[in-house]
Image 1 (cartoon, rainbow, N blue to C red):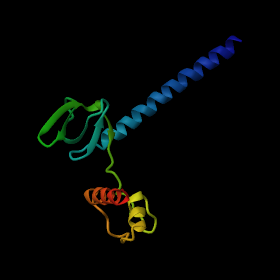
Image 2: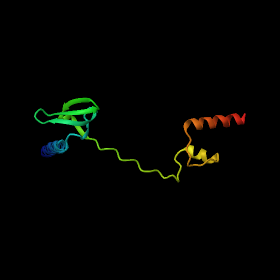
Image 3: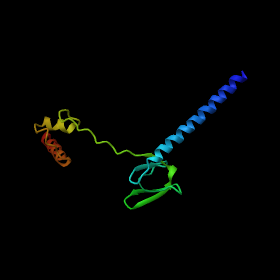
Image 4: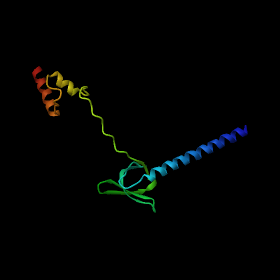
Length: 131
């Protein structure tokens, strides 16, 4: 029984060291990709673009918005932010909102989009006709 306990303890310690090594490897890979101009996120949720890296003091200077700089510890930068992919073009054959259905019901062209003001005016005029 005690042998089984020692084996389980050994496996637990082995798994703990293995996970720690894997995390360090991922962090090293991430930090090797740091360069000025890369968009990143810090561990506390700040998004910014790397402006400068100080390897001697382990500091990274981030530009949070134009003219606003922040200096953070290199290890607090935890993620490289990939640019968002462009949304795919929506097929005009399938209506995705009620405004295109309303335009078809009233007899106007489905390709002509109403502005919100035009829609409000049309609905108000329809309400006056019914009274």
